[in-house]
Image (cartoon, rainbow, N blue to C red; front, top):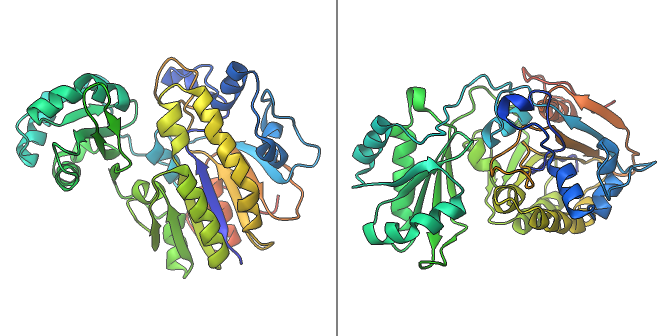
Amino acid sequence: MNNFHIVVLDGVGIGELPDAKNYSDEGSDTLGNMAERLGGLNLPNLEKFGLGNIKPIKGIAPQTSPLASFGKLAEISSGKDSTTGHWELGGLKVEIEFPFYPDGFPKELVEKFMKETGVKGILGNYAASGTEIIKDLGAEHVRTGFPIIYTSADSVFQIAAHEGVIPLERLYEICSITREKVLVGKDSCGRVIARPFIGSEGNFKRTTNRKDYSLDPPEPTILDYCLNNGIETYAIGKVNDLFNYKGIKHQLKTKSNQEGINKIIEVAKSVKGSLIFTNLVDFDVYFGHRNDPEGLHKALQEFDEKLPEIMNSLDETDRLILTADHGNDATDISTDHTREYVPLLFYKKNVPGKDLGIRKTFADVAQTAAHFFKINNDLHGTSFLNE
């Protein structure tokens, strides 16, 4: 059916990049360190694809005849955030230096936030885990009605609010104003994220009503090139937010990996000649950021169990890439993303896999999609379609 699938296993890195020390990420290896911590991984279908051929991973045996071609991608852009990772997968070399606020947002920015949004006060204003900050400040938020603002090692301005205190529509309005009127110029950080939660003291829990407010990519991506050449584009999950809906004709939102996987299969069976770009975010959000290697392994096993169904939804003219956007080593002491290579598994039915080596940029993914659709372009990267 001539479809090209890009599936991003969010945060599933495969070993530190040469410049990892510049990000205090020496020794990071999301898959390798998790395997060592757990005494080996059990991912039989990814093993058959050739995951263990990329590098030694305890429990994942290399294959003599892997089902997919294999390699790993280096990131040429600076940073280790989701926006940069996806934009580079989309064919860009990201030159933007997104601002970071490891010590919290400056006083003048907070004052501007309060003036523009009309909130009477704020809580937090430091780098934190989202689950921990609502545990620490949730009760005070319920008492005062003040939103909780916080950041991370990503270029993000996150706003947490109890759905019973600040209704979703109002939280989304606050985030939209923050994106459009507060975080501009030198303060144009990558994303504003609405982080709603529910529950009571001692039992606060984030909901799936998260919403991201991103920037437009600075140049056309593979999504734009496809759409401008009459090729239908489908974005599943977080891809929609990260590209700020640019170049995306069909926007399919999801609230879980399982829902995302089901949509991959549904779209694969029902459309022709399309680019389908998917992000499965649970690996990163629920396990990498929470230092939970056991949970991450289980989530990967759930994906692994569905991989044959994804394969069966494809026909012999389709292509499938499995990759990631950055690392998030769940065995690391921090809860932040890690500067890592990401895996590359490139599948076509009934075609034996081969070694694609170490690619110089994530943008090889976009260039390969452009090659597949025979699109002339100004994207970065090199196609591996016929290698």
